[in-house]
Length: 93
Image 1 (cartoon, rainbow, N blue to C red):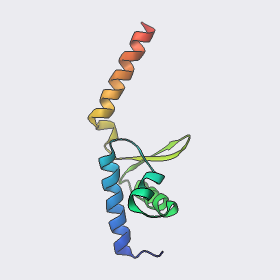
Image 2 (image 1 turned 120 degrees about the vertical axis):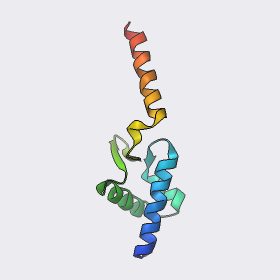
Image 3 (image 1 turned 180 degrees about the vertical axis):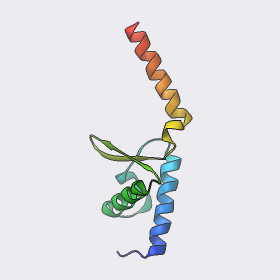
Image 4 (image 1 turned 135 degrees about the vertical axis):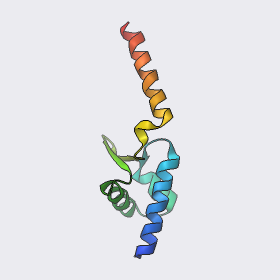
C-alpha cells in the first residue's frame, strides 16, 4: 500500500499521540496494531520521528521501544525511581 505525504503526516501525528498517551514505552508492534499498518512502516515512521527528535527511541534486548521526549520528567517515572532507590537502600541497609 502506498501512502502519500498527507497520510504520512497524519500517521506520524497519530504515532506521537499513541506514544504520549501510553504512559509506558511503546513497541513497534503496539503502534502497528493500533494504526492497522504493517510492522515495517511503523518501524520506519517511529525511527524517523526519533531522528527528527520528536520522540525518544530506547534500544532494549528485545528490540526498540519509544517514549515521549519528556519521559524522564513524567511523574510516574520519577515515582518509580524513588521507589527503586528506597527498596535498594532497605536491601543494603
